[in-house]
Structures are given as structure tokens and as C-alpha cells.
Amino acid sequence: MVSPEVNTYYGAKTRCQERGGILAQIHNQKVQDILAFYLSQLETSNEVTDPDFETRNFWIGLTYKPLMDSFRWDSGEIPTYSSFAFGQPDNQGFGNCVELQASSAFNWNDQRCKTRNRYICQYAPEHIALWEVGR
Image 1 (cartoon, one colour):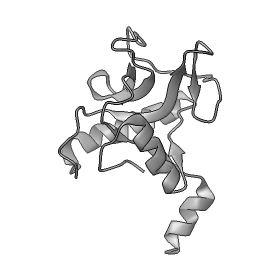
Image 2 (tube, helix red, strand yellow):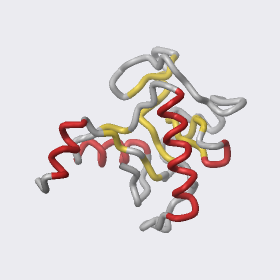
Image 3 (cartoon, one colour):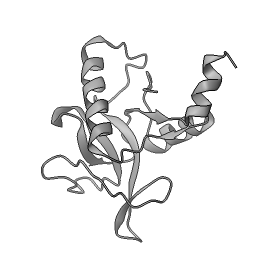
Image 4 (cartoon, rainbow, N blue to C red):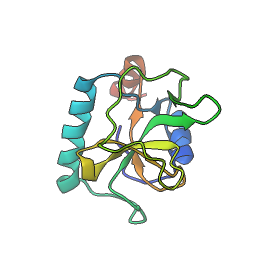
């Protein structure tokens, strides 16, 4: 689910959890390519309900953990795949949260967690099945 509204990283994480999901995790190139294609289509066609967004970027569920000196998915997993944009992560502005960056074909960028972006929630198949029967 791609949000129509914007939020900080931790606000977005909470909104996904309230709906029974998590911020999206990208574990391979195929999923990265599908999301990049889909988001590039949204750029021209999707209405944003909140005009207060700062960027055209999207939060995913990856953050830098200074104590562990590594990026981790919100589940605690160490990424086995990454798609950082050229020159990223660069920690400009102490960016510990990861976004899909529109200006780099939706490759990853480290960003300040308080930036207000749209976000992508990921749900388990059994959760989605409940929506289809109107529950």
C-alpha cells in the first residue's frame, strides 16, 4: 500500500503497524524494479492528499543503527540486498532512515528521519485476503 499522505519515518512506521503491516522491505532486485516502475507511474497520475510533503520520496523499513554500525530492516534483519543510489549512503544531515528517492530512479537514500515523505506499507498475504472479503 502506497500512502496518499506524508509522515515522518517513525510516524509512517506507526501508521503501517496500526493497519496490520510494516514499512516495506526490499530483499531483491525484482521487488526493487517493480516498486521503482510503479512509483514512477504514480509521479504523473496520483493525487497526494497532503500538500505538506517535502519530497517526492517514499519511506521503506530500513534504518541505520549506530550502535550496531549497520543498516537493519525494522524486523532486525541485516539486509542481504541493497539498492543505494550512487554516492549513498552519505549521512548528509545525519540521515539514519532510508527512502526511495525519486530523483535517482527510486534507488535508496539515507535521509533525516523527521523528513515528511509518503511511505510504503507491506502486508502479509493473509492480511490482504481479509480486505478482499470486506472485513
